[in-house]
Amino acid sequence: MKIAEDTLLYRKRRERLARAMQAGIAVIPTAPERVRNRDSHYPYRFDSHFYYLTGFAEPGAALVIVAGEAPRSLLFCRTRSEEREIWDGFRYGPEAARERFGFDAAHPIEALDEALASLLENQPALYYPVGDDPEWDARAMKWLNAVRARVRAGVAAPDRVQDVRALVDDMRVVKEEQFGPVIPIVKYKTVDEAIGRANALDVGLGGSVWGNDPQEAARFASRLECGTAWVNQHGTLHPMAPFGGVKCSGIGVEFNIDGLKEYTTVQVVNVAL
Image (tube, rainbow, N blue to C red; front, top):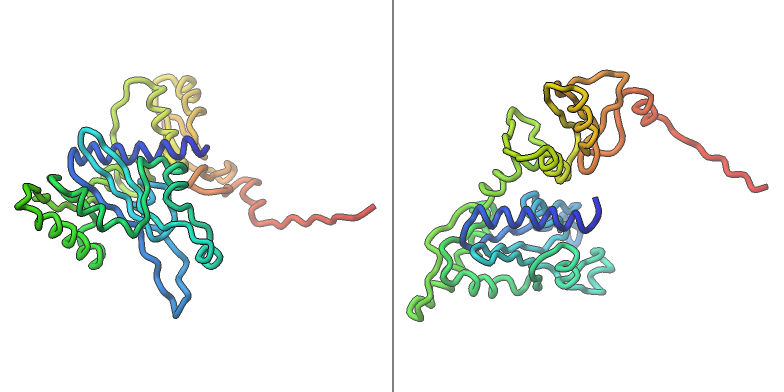
């Protein structure tokens, strides 16, 4: 997937979440780094909800979505540091992250608490991963109390706190491979629209097209960006037919001669003449 398409995909997901919220502020932090011993960390794994909405894989970051008539998405992340990048690896920094990942604005992660105390003024609701991390629960209460302290100045604090993961999970049922007994049903107006929405996903293990005209259905199936496209059936496999995915659904195939080649080793003998 090209960078522009990738950026648009994540932006559309954030816009969908803002529409589902209708109004309020959502805070989605990524996963923290876990210390293994002393100055050694376990290999880092980002939070899936955060990454689904941002595509941003660095630790020490949080996404803030402002819903309403003029929705915005804000990233708070680590700043560039020549010294730390020698040890920890490359960092985008706020400005480069804003441009690369299509946020409306980006700020240092250290500015998050002060920004939330301001953004939550006169908002009806705060959405965040309630109960997921005691530290974030405490920070959320600190933001709310900071807003409540200004009530005599005519400032209202959110009267609802909701778990943002429930809204994101509803989106992911359609957008990701479920691997379970769930079939989302989504309406479409044209076949081109349906194919475009299917190909906008970042996964592509298999897909199927169903119709009364098998030849026409096969033409549509050939336009799907997936490893296997079935017509009037789904999930049937044959040991002589390669099976594999594209995009985030994997690299390489199983079965057939192409699958057997995965278990072979290629040696190159390079002789100077």
